[in-house]
Image (tube, rainbow, N blue to C red; front, side, top):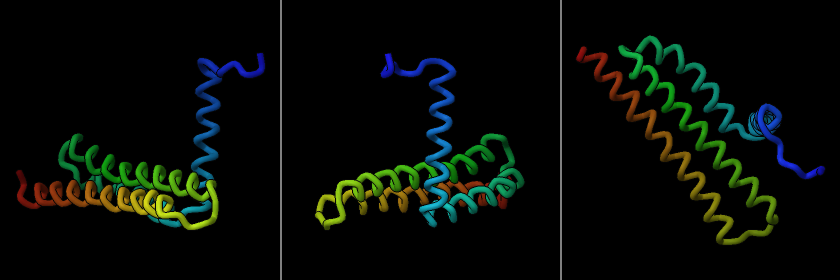
Length: 125
């Protein structure tokens, strides 16, 4: 049957291909994602240097990754809304604004995490 779902390794390969295409699309189309991604990559060696424990280092890195994940979700919401139609609608505006708010709120996670780790590093606890 032509419509049988993929299983096992074929399913993983298909998921990898789809994710790769998604990454290409967001990298090409979303400047905010590109900037956040570059900042994330630059922050990794700083996190390795700054984190005094493996857990602190992981928290610093994961907090940056969290912002990227929320940005991807926000971009997918925007794409779905844009697919519906170009006319302005209050619910479309609300969906896009809430997605944007989620990205903004997600930036507080690395802000708080990095501040705490820097304070620990300075105080030496």
